[in-house]
Length: 188
Picture 1 (tube, rainbow, N blue to C red):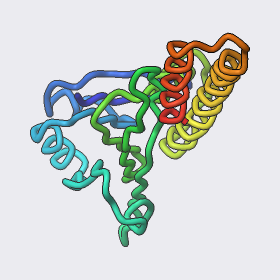
Picture 2: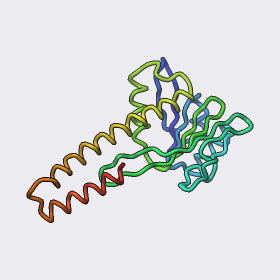
Picture 3: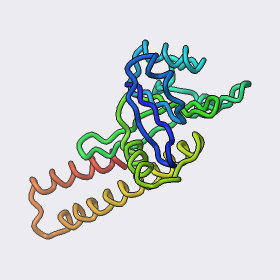
């Protein structure tokens, strides 16, 4: 899915793009590619003269590939964003490319922090004025989201420890406590 974000009256507006012709109608500051198709990558290459690397969201990358600047000034950043799903907590690898004052983000699944920033940017005029600010605000929202998630983990673990330390611990209660600890350890 290819979404573009433009600025109007200090607010961020989203458009889902279904063709190269639609892409040409806008001047975005942010182009978000979630599980992009080969065709969507081709549109980006044709319209923006930007090739999305095949390994953009690979899990196993060398440290030197996490942040670098090309000779042409393109900035490349790869990082993980937490998805604090209670049942299956995990990270989503996101590749960012800052190219000609447009931020491109590439990832394989929805990222909660992206939704959080989109909501804030629609409600708060002037929050974002350029592509670099999108990137910075995403990292800011990620720090907040991760901190909130960790606070919830510690609250839940405190409840588990209270149950375990009570005098009437059954095998079932102990099993539930161990399961809760394992889930929270994964999330942490």
